[in-house]
Amino acid sequence: MSNLKKLIFAGIVALASAFGASSQVVALKTNLIGDALLSPNLGVEFGLSPKWSLEISGQTNLWPIEGHTWKHWAVQPELRFWFCRRFAGHFLGLHGIGGMYNFGNINFPVNALGSDFRDLKNNRYQGWAAGAGIAYGYAWPVHKHWNIEAEIGIGWLYTRYDRYPCAVCGNKTAENVPHNYYGPTKAAVSVVYLF
Image 1 (cartoon, rainbow, N blue to C red):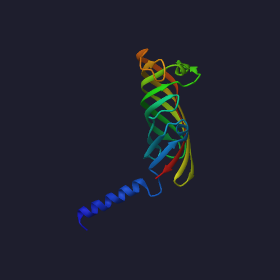
Image 2 (cartoon, helix red, strand yellow):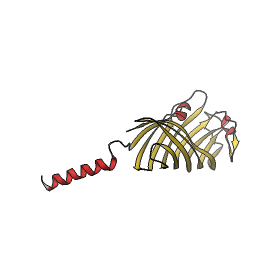
Image 3 (cartoon, one colour):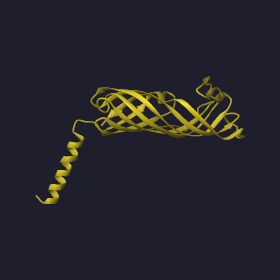
Image 4 (cartoon, helix red, strand yellow):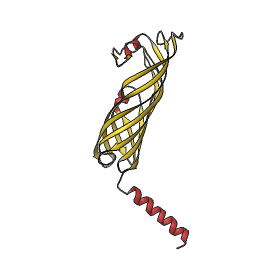
């Protein structure tokens, strides 16, 4: 066997043993809470080491919902530390958030932590947001390739928005307004497929 063939063979064996034949290294998931809130989403998670993984999820809603303005897109990467082994049991996450939104004519009677969501009933807000948070979660293996996962996170978002007096009006009543949001930044009950 030539030296090149030996080197290629040794590389294939090293890669195969590094990943292991029975250990999952990639997961595909969807958050059922996001789906129920008409925000289709998809996430992919990569195993980085036996106790670390990186999840990248995204969600969007770019179509009209009758009588409301509920359009947005967001991306949320998260670095996770697993207490036992990746994709099973307890984990802590550190996530970032970024996206754009256009919300209005929504009755959400909550005024908490410096954000008055009651204004969404009579105004439309259009802008961008970025921030970070921490999360705790748990993954239940239910089959060799399937998990159920629950996660809750809190954090901070910085946003800038334009405000309009109604869901379809074009006249701005405020422009490029900064706002800091503190509170929940992640809530998920996900169905996970492991490769």
